Image 1 (cartoon, rainbow, N blue to C red):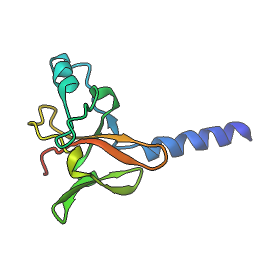
Image 2: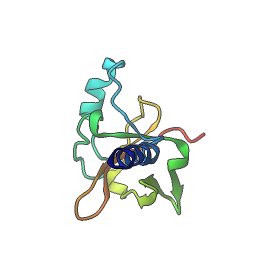
Image 3: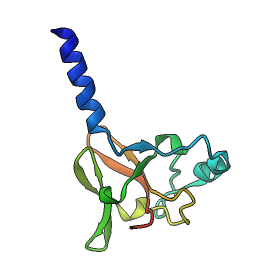
Amino acid sequence: MLGKVSVLVGVVLSVAFVGVAIAHDHNRPELNNWFMGLRAGGSGAPCCDGSDATSLEDPDWDMKDGHYRVRLDGEWIDVPPEAVVTVPNRYGSALVWPYSGYQKGIRCFMPGTMG
């Protein structure tokens, strides 16, 4: 019985994270320094490297009322204007650096190309 529950939990967790990918691509080492230099536009806070960024598919980010928002774990979260990274996106897909703790939030967000 315990084995079946473990398998079921594994399947549920796998399905929950479909479409979410860690952004840092070790097959593209030329982007390492670029990732390390990314800063949130308004605050100037570093976004850190791409290993803690999440790549988003088009359905998981958009603009509403002139502000970006992202969908994480099935919940839409407004991106604070000061978290938007304003340099050109060399990675391609939209990237988000979320944080969690007392509440979920966005440390950095870089829009991709809306398709």
